[in-house]
Image (cartoon, rainbow, N blue to C red; front, side, top):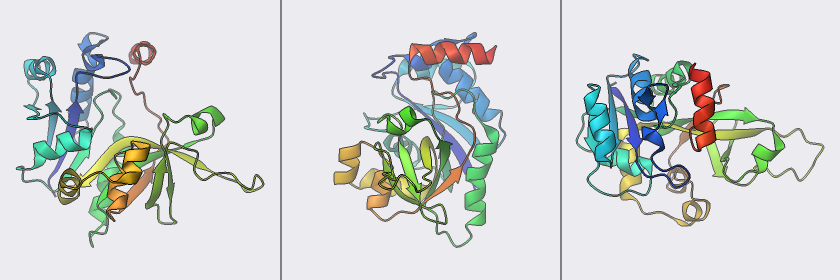
Length: 242
């Protein structure tokens, strides 16, 4: 299998504009993420795909591989789909541009899903983390996921799922981490299929796969990671980097 990593990188961000070009101890966040992904040695290729000439020029300046998006996109999956349409690949892993602390073991687990899936039952794989903090469980910015007994996703929601109707039942909650591994056909189908009601309501792109019958294998990881969504997150990342 030919396996590549794609890092979608928008310059604009509603909560923290230009965050990918913010300095993280001597280098921009996107450069740190790109170099960390390359250094995993897990991929046949690592490519940043961006709508920004600023990010494009930055990655070029460090000798990295980068592509310009041809159009505006609603989500990272659409941006990746456009970029891989004409590439001869089997699996593409979406690495978030704002997560410079690439966690190798979790990426290995995602790749292993497809190596083990000889009958090609899995369309995509993604990560989930067990959470217990009540504020995080109730926070609509935290996407929760529920699975069947084989860890295939049943649904994703910004609401607490499952709802604890019976408080005597021991309920577990899992946070969805936005790291995906796709078969090429799955992401191209996503790109060409229209958004349906559930995705439009929740504003969670992976629901589209479920609505069209795709199978998402969830892999549990114990690493929360550091997502840089706010200036406060950046300061925390700087301390960790040191």
